[in-house]
Length: 106
Image (cartoon, rainbow, N blue to C red; front, side):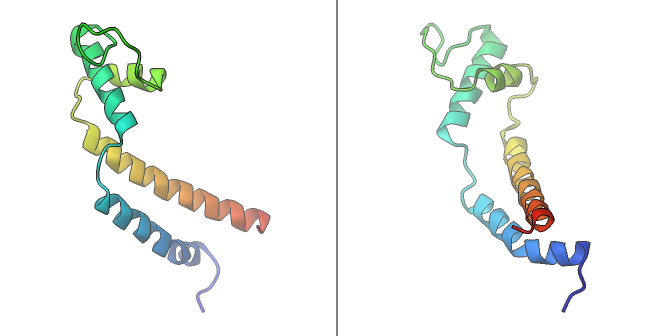
């Protein structure tokens, strides 16, 4: 039996973390909503127009703030970094959830 503490917590969370990483590697793609936001933000950054197709005035983004923030990023090929960040964020949330469960004995 492993003694209680950070090592035990890590070892208990390890299968979930491994499953998340395997899932992320298997389904390594950009979802449609994120892709749409990338196109809108690229067009805003490069052409000053918040549109999907240049010259076509429609609103199709669902997350205005994220789209505008991405337009301020100088390099648009950061999609790979965002994917990695989402996996790390998932690991952090799994860890946080485990800590909350232990704190409140749920």
